Amino acid sequence: MYFPIYKDIFYNEALIMRRVLVGDFKIGKEEKEAINKVLDSGRISEGEKVRQFEDEWAKYTGTKHCVLMSSGTSALIAGMTAIKYVGYASNNDQILTTPLTYVSTSNAIVLTGMEPVYVDVDIDTFGITYENLKLFLEKNPDNKIKAILPVHLMGYPVNMGEINKLAKENGLITIEDSAQAHGSILNGKKTGSMSLFSCFSFYIAHNIQAGEMGALNTDDPQIKEYANKIKTNGRACSCRICTRPKGICPQLKQDDNIDFDPRFSHDLIGFNFKAMEFQAALGLLQLSKIKEIIKKRQENVKYLNEGLEEFSDILKLPKYSDNVSYLAYPLVIKKPEVMKREKIRRLLEENGVETRPLFGCIPAQQPAYSFLKGKYKLPNAEYLGLNAFYVGCHQYLNREDLDYVISVFKKVLRKDL
Image 1: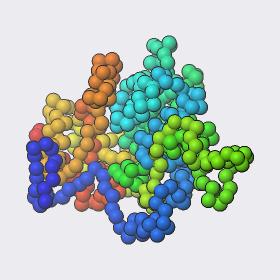
Image 2: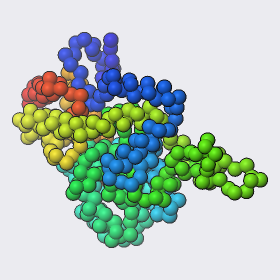
Image 3: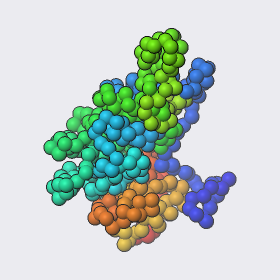
Image 4: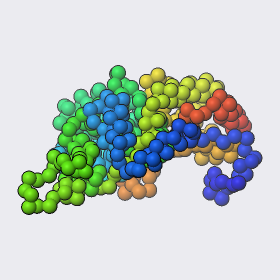
C-alpha cells in the first residue's frame, strides 16, 4: 500500500516504523452502538440527538443557547448573517479579526458581505491582542468597524476580558471563534461564553470530534432565534422541535382559510446548515469524555516539551497551561536560517510524523486574499505563517507514539545541526 506525503514523493507504508497522525478518531464498540441506535430510531435528520447535544453543549460551555449546524464555518456564517438581521451590522461594515488562522473565519466575514480587517497576533499564543486592537482603533477613528472577532487558536484563549472592555468603549460587539478551543478556560470562564455569540467546530481532528459538525453558542435570544431560522433556509418556524405532527403549532396563523405551514414559508433568506443525528450521537459520546480528552492532550504536550527541551534554542516549544485545551502541538522555528520549515516538515513526514503548517498569514500568504497583499504590516503573523507548524498531541497517542515523535525530531534536528 502506497500513500502520498508530498507531490511526486511516495513512500512504502511498510518501510515506516510508525505513522503518528496530527489527528485521529477511533471507531470502537461505543461508537458503533451510538450510530446503530440512530439507524434503529428511523430518523437520521435533526431530531432527539441534535437537541440533546445542543442542551449539553450549552451547559458545558456556560451559555444559555446552542444551535447545532453542519460545520463550524456554517455556524459562523449563520451568526454573521444573524447580526445583520438583528441590526448590529450591515453590508460593507468591517470586522476586526486575526490574520493567522484557518481561512474559514475570514471567508465567513466576506461571504456575509462584510470586510475583514486585520491586526497582528501574539507571537507565543497566536491570537490578536488588546494592545494591537486598541492601537488600530486609536489610529483609525473614522473606521466602519462593527465587531471584534478573535480566534482562540490551537486552544490558547485570547484575553476576552480586556477585549470586551475595549469593544464596549468603542460601541462594538464581540464574537468568538472557538473552533479550536473546546474547554479552554480564561478567568474561570470557558472560551465561547464571553461574547455576543461564538462558534465551535467538531471537525474530525478537533478535541470533540464528530466528522463535520459545528455549533453557535449565545446568551442572546434574538441571535438564537435567527440562527435557527437562517440554518433552515430562513423558514418562518424557529422552533427547536416541530410540533406540527401533534396538531399543535405556535407559528400557525389563526385564519383557517389560509393553508399556512411555517416549515415551508420563508421570511428570511438563509442557508441549509442543518446537522444530522449521526454527528450529534458521536459528539455526545465524545462530550461524555471531554475531561479525560483534555487531560490526555495536556499530558502529551508536557511530555513532548520535556523530550524536545534540548532543541528549545532553535524551536519555540508551546507555552503550557492547565487552562488550555490543546488542539495540537504547535512549534515555531526560531532560526529559519538553520532549518527551513519546508525541510523539517518533509523530513518528519518521511519518518512517519504527520505535520501541518500553522495556516499562514491570510492577507499576505493566502492566494485567495492576494488582493490584500501589502495592505497590512503584520510581522508576527507573517513570521508564524512562514515558520510555525504543528504535530499531533491527541488523546489516542500512547507513550510509544510520543517517544517515537521525540526520536524522529532528534534524528532530523541533530543530523542537520
